[in-house]
Image 1: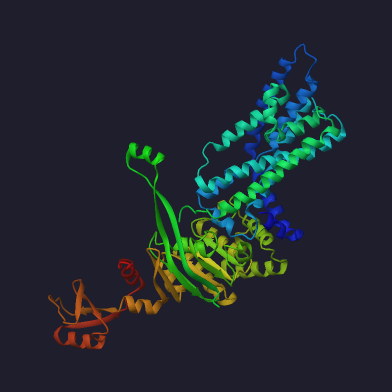
Image 2 (image 1 turned 60 degrees about the vertical axis):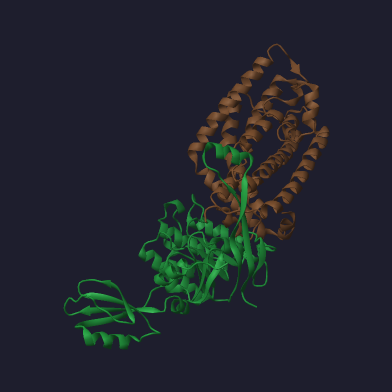
Length: 277
Length: 328
């Protein structure tokens, strides 16, 4: 994929295919209006449950591990917003296409197949900003509290870090979906991965509340760099000048996973089976 | 150098044998019994630019697997494929940019969006410039009436319309070679006709090489000058349609209409294969007896009102080929 990618950095003409792929997914997802309401409903329930959990936990306590109640509420609101933006579809898309044999059509196109799926997932993510993230942000601002960043600088770094987070999450999903080429059905692999991310990424409970020993173990895993890193920067738990280290680690994970993915892809490529004639 | 060169192509699949019953299922889970199947067994052939070649064979003969290897989707176990001198397995993107493909049973169009949206995407994927895009849309509109469906969402198209859309999508970048996998499957007579007409037209106008797999012998008869017949993973016939028919089915039918009912018709060099009240079908080998001779012999003994000679059709020929056991 890296080699393919290098050949492709020749300018706008080629990139425009990926832009258009993203745009088409955006158009498709915006046409599913019913899903906008159902996902808004689910997200609201989740975020409200979290908000009341933290309100109860903070009763009579000023701050925990240097984090105040309003910061924690911002953390949990922003975590839900990020989750609605991080909608990664590659596992589902690739499995569908492999089990139905439509993967054959992907191989017929003179573009990189993995970048095609990345472009489509970016398209879905952008549609989520409009259809899921924005409505939730408005409701939270009006009825709970506006999730304000610690400083303008924190906001900028948060944006960059969140993009890294998206890439890490996408690469993990892409690596898992490569297994499709060997086993055809992923079964509950996606659910298991989602569960691990939920627990170890600080998505619901920040890792600083975990026992020290477990914290150290989680630190060597990539998951906290998916949620906790950008969120800590946003609320000011990690100050902008300290942010460089976790963001570099994020970047290192991206590099590692990208090379793993390229290697796995070259192996998977030779194992393609086309189902159904 | 031929346009498409296929040399000693082999594809083996490892298949897990599933045992019977619950006990068998459990034992398969722990000790899967695996064995190898040769789907494509050492095939070689060349195809020249501008040919329309029919790829036929019974279900499970290996023709789809062969086509998938020719287009670079599957990696062969052994052997090589070269399109215009380049291997699709080593340099996928360079090769597929010049190929078009249509699968009758699956669509490459975006289901939820209008047809034109898929065209716009393909325009970018294949880097088609505006002039070529416009010219091709115009050409495709002449043969396929594409503008009447271009603004309809794909899910609302009928099967025939969707097929027209798929064909247009495959031709948008003027590919030098077009792979059609059962393009007329499930279509009505009129739609079939317009699709065959389209294939003929693009072959004549653009010189596109067409490789067609089909079970519809009408497609073969109307389009293909050359036929490659695959059975049990091997090529059993390769050549012009007429000469294959000649070789596989050298007999003719003589249909005789009698003036009055007559039983026990007989001729030493022909065989009665079917009788209706006044009509009798004789099957004869034209190398053993000429039709004129047979007619004059018969008219001497029987009261004949009318005769006609029927050539064996492609269906007879295919049946003969499929029945033939393969010598390993």
